[in-house]
Length: 339
Image 1 (spheres, one colour):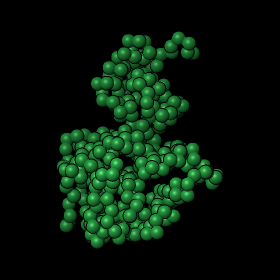
Image 2: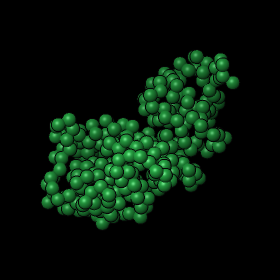
Image 3: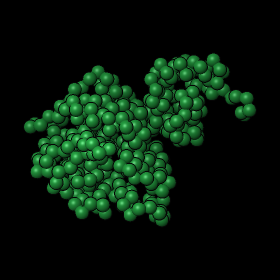
Image 4: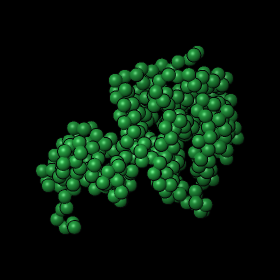
């Protein structure tokens, strides 16, 4: 193997890999029963999220309309971005992660009505600019083909867990910046592809939407990895984001139990912006068997914060635990004025 990207597998990374693998196992039994409607909703979230990171302003409702063939008023470019992303994600199952040809084909689908050189590596210098400042200067154009060939060869032979290699590839891809445009959305697309070839449930998870929810931290992790010339910090960020995505998927699907068929009316709602106490109540109304760790992952708080919030809810007689910690469940207590 000629090129080995620099990174370190830390204890935190190993713990995240273990936690993610456990959640994948919990979802595995039910993933075949995920409704086509839920898969469609998550695909729409994925497309909305990955394009929003790049500045596209179309909403989930508007992208749904485009998928359904309904007219949507927007700029020519934004409409082209949506149609390109739809085409690329629909074709994802047909691609091989370590194939340069498939990567170029996917970029051609993603950017066909946006770039004249869609599906081709860039032939000029590029960089990332924010607020008038240069944040990243990509390698010279004449090095791109060789760098991508090295990266694909590493990916093909890598012995690390696919959860880790997918994150490393994502960072290295963004560092190389092989295309004139569309590098961010292609890096996220290809990480999803690598993950899906480890386990197909990642084809129906809105990982890109979760990245959008943590966009500033995403860019911060990329910049820190650049400064350190090492992708460890980015691996940890992405694994944490995958962990949160799976935790939310468990809320959507519910564990196999007496509550597995309960309607998930509130869990689909956006909990962003809610206070921790309110978010806990909202989530437990839909799935009383969520663990403290799952609540922490979905809400984005640490276990201590969740524990303190649960104690407050118990003291206020808003929440009650029935049964043991392992086999029991939560009961949200009706308040005055509620049925």
